[in-house]
Image (cartoon, rainbow, N blue to C red; front, side, top):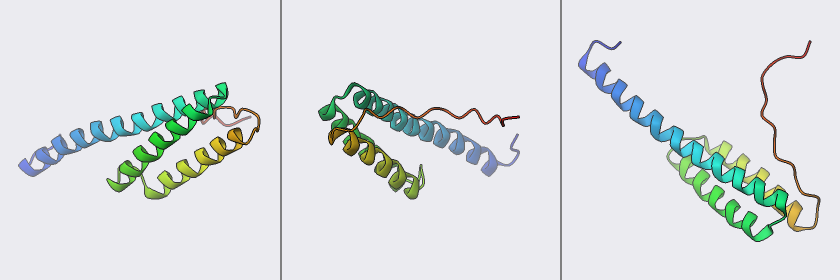
Length: 105
């Protein structure tokens, strides 16, 4: 628990920033899910539109330093490769799986 006035203010600022950053990251992830859904269904125009929105949101987040600029570039690069592969007639790309972090015995 902060004691000084400046520490109390910093805590309030950090809480506001955390909520804002979480919302921005959540929007990016939601848009990525929509992109993956469009890719698996084979809807190329919708996938391109969702990719455009993901790129826009990641660029804004990187400009505000909510996410690292290299992470934004990596996200855009990977997603553009998937969109390009599906649009060229490749097989529908599966969605990435979430890692649990448990080590195998």
